[in-house]
Image 1: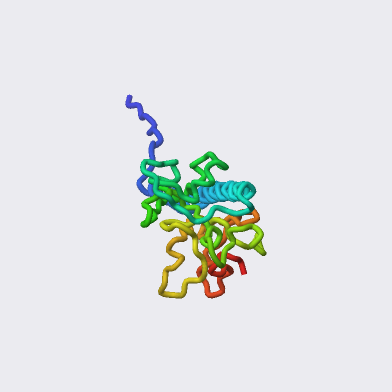
Image 2: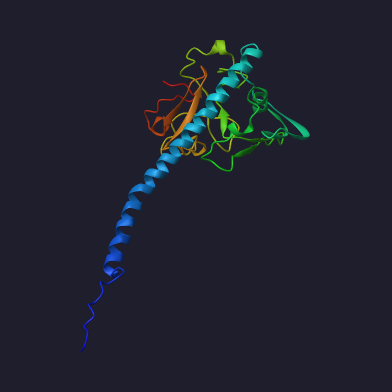
Length: 223
């Protein structure tokens, strides 16, 4: 007698089934990856904002010790000197180190490596992308260096995210120009973090600087 063995059920997937699964995974990845990237950048934005908040408090502590004045614009060559923030000499940014004692807060986690700038007249190199509003540490009019000279502390920029320069400048750049926008990273969801002279820090959108109705004047004061 012949025995007929029942056929076993097939195992594995057909090519069509595999392609369908791959397509579904690709669609989910396309949807979720931008969400994850945005969430990660949001976390970096918060870390950067915390850095600026601490620097703002350090500036206010400095001002308490120095006749209510923020650090003036200065850079002195000193052979072999390097405090991790200023190399080849001392800069106004070095004045904040005794109040923070942490070099990491001078760099934004979204901008690696941390930008540097070399003062051509002294050779001093600073490594940070949090720069003073030029009119904060300027020793001359208009100057917001002295706390008493600032009429709107909650609207006057103290420090901001900036790169490749010695100070932060503001104001609307007309079409066809790149000053000062080329020095603003806008790496946090199309915006930058700023700390004001009253010590509060917040995120500002790129549109606050790039439109004809920019909310900041050239001195870094919110209109």
